[in-house]
Length: 230
Length: 230
DNA sequence: GTCCTAAATGCCACTCAGTGGCACAAGCCT
DNA sequence: AGGCTTGTGCCACTGAGTGGCATTTAGGAC
Image (cartoon, rainbow over all chains, first blue to last red; front, side, top):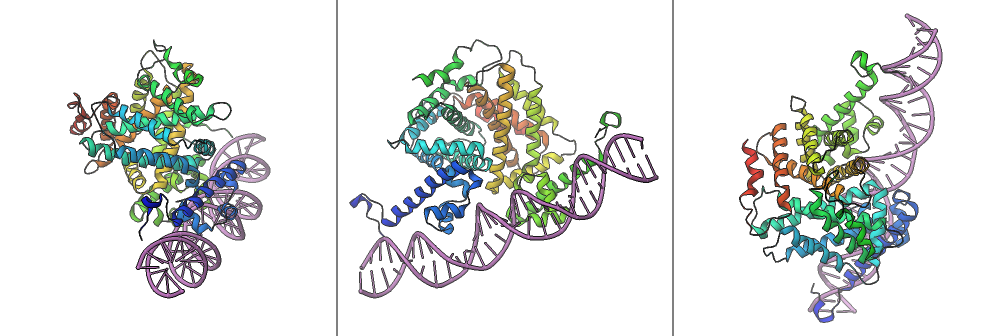
């Protein structure tokens, strides 16, 4: 089977149909689950609405939870791929990863805010559905493990060195903090708001190790809130 | 119903029987799942072996995964409770949390290594069973959210301040890194080895933000390995 | 010790996510 | 157009998980 992508700039019909089915399942799931709850909608109902068989559903998604977390998984996949092509200079690895995640996140913007809208719905469902949250965390963890392996390989790091994984886990924690701040914003926050919130959280990272009950850092802990005025 | 604990230093029979049932389910599950895989043992089989009904199983555990992650959940519960009773001085919050987790972890040592043995089995199952790993991560995340709320309340922190959660997530990431190092040790590592590994990871934390591809930190990144010689 | 009540357990029927097998349909290539 | 590969739908099934309810067990009052 040859696929003449470069000549026609298009995926084969098979691939296009598959992507359309996936997208239809994601969008319909997010809408129905948001309206009636994750457990309030069976997969039979979802598949009937989209007019595919349940067997097809499971050919596209590993489980019910994954249809909800697909938008965020796409971003983590993007980060994993981006890190594969990174050039590491002398800068701290955490700094490089930070900029990479910001770039990856920025690139998820499809221009019409569709991705951001999906992520919002997905996030809200995750907050009220433990199994969805669990699935997302595990997917993220697995991606981090893959990225860690890349870092070790590219940087020639010792297998016992905990620093790469700590850096990655802090990167992920920052993203999750930004996501929480973003979904807590009033109204319908935009993609750019999420990027801004992530920047603000990154700015607060060094102080995560040093802030105290009463310290001289009081002025700076408004960083996350100030970013919302941009 | 009055329970005369202080007078006799004992839990009521009902509570004791319940704890015994729980422990039997955990130990049997860990043994059977380790031998035949998580998916290779049904709950019907597990309950028949322990001689309780499946209904009772679900009165004790929220799901099949939780019977595996129960030992670690006990530790996170301990940390959550310990943080409720913390005195915060002027030290950095991360430092206080660090010492608290070390104390909590140390206290999980029951003297005969039983808890550590359960955690090892649990950890190994989690590594080869995504749904177990997912459940653990979500439980941990939920506990972190509870601890974060305590920190905010006790320290009078702003709801938008990302630092407490970042500190907590870094604490958790450190524990997971230590757990991975510990289970990777040859032989049957002891409870004290886990404490040592956690100390070593904590020592590496500041550098997680600063290490680079080629930097002047090369000497210190053996901290995790040196701890294994203690 | 007896009796009553609260709490725990077991049994049962059931739902629904998830799986595997296989026939049929659709797309691709020559 | 024909043949082959890939994708889909149908179906039967398993096992985690749930709710209802009868029975058993433990606890407390007298």
